[in-house]
Length: 97
Image 1 (cartoon, rainbow, N blue to C red):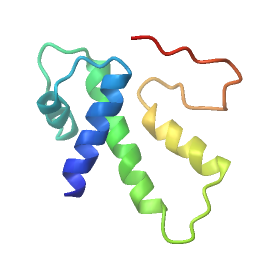
Image 2 (tube, rainbow, N blue to C red):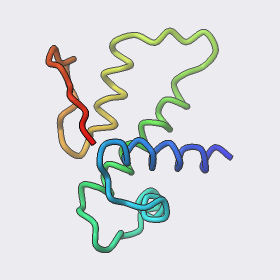
Image 3 (cartoon, rainbow, N blue to C red):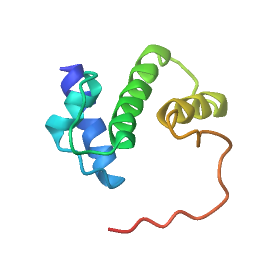
């Protein structure tokens, strides 16, 4: 059940960000399989997102206080392959279709 939830969360989050990977391709990437016809970074984004979810599950327990340090660690794990994890941005983000 958890694995299916994490797969769906990863697929949908990456789809919102513009990933061209299908649900099956996302599952393949998470399982460490090569996804043909897709950019390497797309597979890495799926793996990193999945790892960030696992990290949250390990760290957050009852009465856990989410602080800035935790959010930065989580962001770093999610962006590990492109090295963009770091301080909060003060810039506006504009999402487009």
